Image (cartoon, rainbow, N blue to C red; front, side):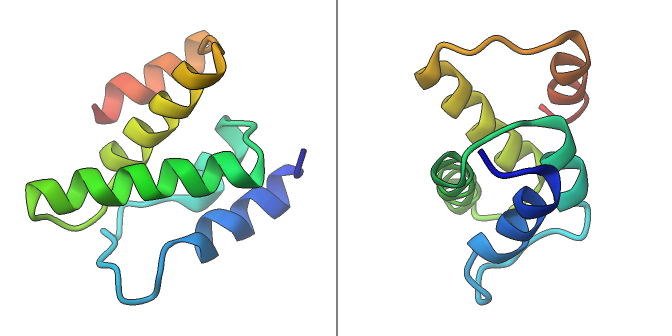
Amino acid sequence: MPDAALRKELWESIVPKDTPVAGEVDALMLAQAFELSGASIKNAALHGALLAASEGVTVGMKHLLGGIENEYGKQGKNFSTSQRELLEAFL
């Protein structure tokens, strides 16, 4: 499992350069708040990008958090109270 520093790098590099990403996206916060594998980060980012594209908007925190929520659901993971609060703040 990658540590927070590597997860931050993954979040920053996983979305293709030509994908419009909102300035609100905080890779450090995502990396620190959610312990995900590289594959799960990729899946969450792709899911988030598809959500944003379906809405015709730039990729924002709500889209990436929606992707994380999807990944947690697939893995049967539960959110901590602080993670749930973070999700609710953006979703």
